[in-house]
Image 1 (cartoon, rainbow, N blue to C red):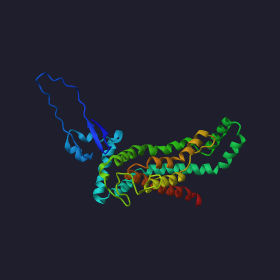
Image 2: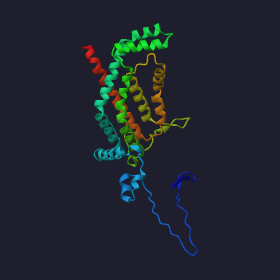
Image 3: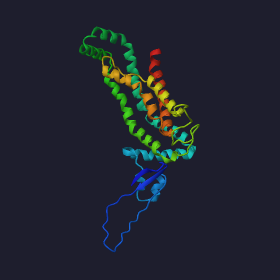
Image 4: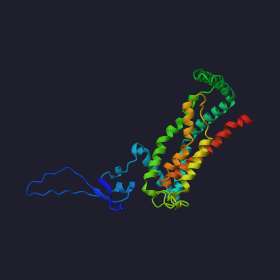
Length: 290
């Protein structure tokens, strides 16, 4: 079946194709089919039959997306508000992965503290071997090793993110495609299934939206609080770190037209990351102060 915009684009034209059929003279050919016109809501289309629920495509994370959708509906049956339900499910997901996340954040913070302690030595080596990058890198690696710093250990900090990634992608797909969020309001947001629209910015006609801006600001703060990996002597890594600084701006623009429910999830997730980093900073710094 092919769906295309028709006329003023407020209508949709459906074309159904099937194999050619040769009709003998004097005979007739009758084709029968059933058409479902309705919302892609899992329980509804499943009740229709014909495995119609398979038309809801959650991609390779479908095995996680469906349980998450059921869980979101269950939460909503108690809170009667999908905005609150999204916040609760985001907090629960964070709590599940909290031990891994805290362990990774503590490791990265401790490495950052060590890097700050030996920064004068790093600067001295960079100045001493500024004309010999190979020797500079070699001496920097010796310095790291003598102080128990492994620049590659930062890759271990990616492990919790990699483990969480399928869950976050599944939740992303659920919030992006779920018809259940339609006409569900939260605070100033009228419809969590649609992009937030307060008013159009005069002169340019672009919708002004608060939630994507909150997401970008919270992402920026979270990024600034996150310990940086050692990049001394590695120009490629330094360039990558500079590019990462623009990610909050880039994703704010990319997410500007996405459903408000998805932006709410991402914003809450960023705020929780900030809270976790504050806790880790205190956890690492307190023994040194004592």
